[in-house]
Image 1 (cartoon, protein in one colour):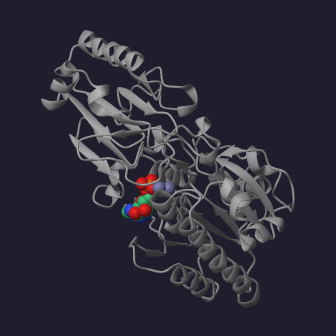
Image 2 (cartoon, rainbow, N blue to C red):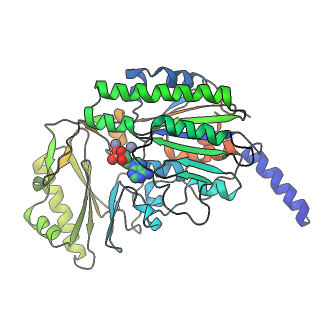
Length: 416
Ligand code: AMP
Ligand code: ZN
Ligand code: ZN
């Protein structure tokens, strides 16, 4: 076959596999910390109306159910072990540096997988971002066409207005993939708890803004648009009686090793990630420490569990021994307990970060509607790594290779 014929065959095959080309625009909106339970508890009218136009499913967060690991899995289609952001805060033993949320802005090598907008741009799909965790990290040449970096000032309305403005640009300049992120529901959930008027107000606020946005899309925007509204994880009310002080977790010997940096601990209220200095601790010492932590746990409380790298629960997808940012030991708090240390205590009423399979309140939402999405089909709960292949199909582009997400999972909701 000559080169030109081969080209046409390739184009035909890819259009069959990935649907029609020049498809509709995709808008992906993330409401941080919006639990699936809020849909029935708070009955947000516009969000529920939107769901009746398309599909609604429980979205399963990846481990740990924190903002950065989950937003990166949503946008790379891979588990945290592959995209590198294994927690909101973790350590790199070779660099001797600690990652904290947003650190990719200063050093993009924290990210070990490319976000979806990179592939979209490469295939000629313009993208626009009004906030997305780690969107500030520099890619490798395929930056989004439009990008507003994270700040905590811009209002919800500003974000929706900007999206409408982007959509109204002349066809060749208008982005086809638009992402945005909203943190107010997560913040209200943490601070005031699950049954608070403040959380209710935050949900009403985003619901009203979303309702106005959908109205404007229908009235003012000419192109066909598929909208995905999702969250990264839910929220769990903390039991104030289940605070675990670190001085009950670490015995004297282990605390000494932490003090002299033979063990580094990346702490959060729901996990302790322990990294051994393999140049200073023998294999025997490491295994002794692991056993001591387990013995202390047994004598202590049932509100946390101790795991060694290589033996992490399978569904955490963290048993890659060659990935250095994955800790040697994970001390995992069970819902509704939390770790406290030094002057630090989670002084909020609710949190997330736990293994999402241990508490139903941690399930997140996935709603989608638009011209390419079927209406009313039941969708069983699925993990957020499958969203990248779904968006690839909606946009008619080739999904990234070697990702964990599978095209089949959401294939049945596409309207052909
Ligand atoms: P979490 O502790 O998992 O609830 O993280 C949520 C917090 O992440 C939000 O309240 C924001 O302060 C922060 N955040 C979200 N997006 C970004 C971003 N792009 N850059 C820096 N921080 C962010
Ligand atoms: Zn979050
Ligand atoms: Zn949060």
